[in-house]
Amino acid sequence: MKKIIIVRASPDWGGLSAKLQQQGRLAPSDYLPTPLPAGFPPNVPDILDLWNSSLAMDFFSVRAAVGAIAQKTWQKTGADYIMSVPDFIQWAATHPDEAVCLFPTDDDDFFAPHLFEGLAVADRPYIRRFPSPIYVDMLFNRPLDSRFPRLMPRLRRLYGRYPRKLALFAPLVRPGPDIDGLQTLACDYFCQTNNYALMGRGSDWGSKMHEVADHIDVSRVLDRFKYRWDDGPAKQIALTNKHPCSISRLMIMLREGFKGATLRRGLEEYVRSFDHLTLPADMAWMQTPLFQLRDLFANLLDAKSAEVYAETRRYNAGL
Image (cartoon, rainbow, N blue to C red; front, side, top):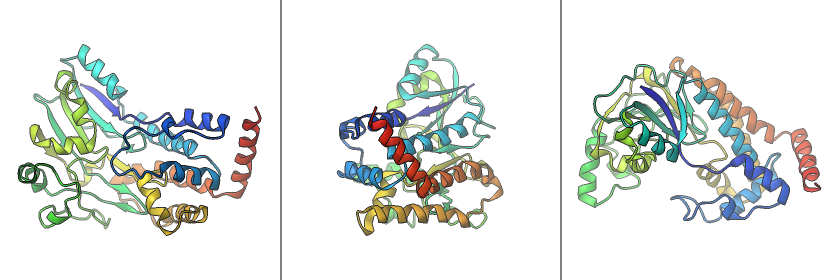
């Protein structure tokens, strides 16, 4: 069985940083898709300009560094391949009978070293879901009640679509028990960004990759597939990041005022949140990458780092 991590499309963050330092400014078309993804505000360019004028490193450099931290976790999983969606589609066309275990992910989320342990060749394709803890200003557990996936086809038949949020159905979408005292959040989608595996063979998923690579899309078509879930404490194989470079997180941070001081205060609160972080034993693998994130964002607030980075930008602008 080939163990494969599928990375969804994202900008070339390092290339964008280099271009910014050479040109001094980027056009929104350099880094924003058209149309904008759901939930993206129209003022993303203004948000990034505020970041670049207020902090020690430009947004794109920081985002590249976040991705590098995540990729180090992937490299410890024993994956045979780390592929983009188009690359996997091409690979599957030439390996239709190869047994596969596929984990789609964003470029900034973490995987555990034991990601592929205990996953065997599947006789027929199915989707396997795991717990999806998320770090925001604290670590939350996100298990899922087993009735949730059975409820989804009924919702689609009733409404013609799945509601973006299922808050009205909270009594039916109950989260599972807390794990070692972690606060628990209910899930609004069956699949989160990096907590599900696609089991089967290359031919099972190659032609379907465009409808299953994204967690929102696969949640909406889940009733077309066989699925199972593993929500036990021993199955903590992934972590979703809501770090300060995430657009949704930035929007929340800037609610109190669109200015550099507000942005810096939000970063300070994020960095301080790690002072109270205690990881359960089954999540101990998260400690190193999480604290690497803390150090990365703490350095943005360091005056000396800001001074050195500003000098570097002036030098690059003069080349």
